[in-house]
Amino acid sequence: MVITPRSSPIIHFSPPVAWGLDSEWREAHETLAYLFKRRGAALDGVRFKARQIREGLRPLFDLFDRLAPLCCPGCETVCCWVARVEFDFKDLLLFHALDLVPPPHQLRRHEDEHCRYLERQGCGLPRLMRPFVCTWYFCASMLELYRKEPPRTQRFFSARMSAVQEARQEMEAEFIRVVTSE
Image 1: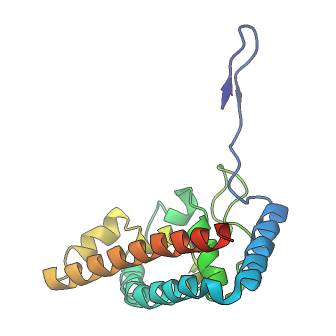
Image 2: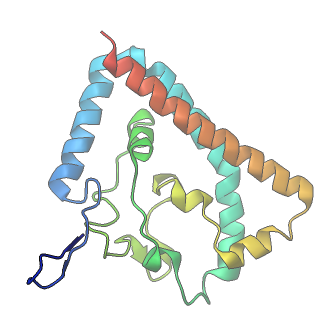
């Protein structure tokens, strides 16, 4: 945001990230845990979609695990350092629907920070615990390697990614439908 009154200096500040404060992060997870407990079996459809997502992601994780060592070690613009990524609501839903313990913090507190889970050897989070965007993002180097895959393989992974994206939308819609109905 830029404030420009006539005689005042320009002031820049970084917008906050959703659940960037640890208190907000805890509150979001406490609320979701409460809703999953309170709604119980009514959220089984959400849990089912979450399991579909997990299974759909497995081959994508294998692909990334194969391609990342070929392009990431020598990279000078590490995605985790320059990208402005954060967990979204569907990521949080997935943690709770699969009974996973969420990471202790949002990736960043504000827009100017890089990912706090970036470690010397890459991401400190297991693949399933990373934001979805970290699973589908291909940098230019990785995309170049991916395009060398046989067309059949590319179609397989594209179909998987589409199915996961659709299941994420359906999981969120089902959650909202259940928790807003009485």
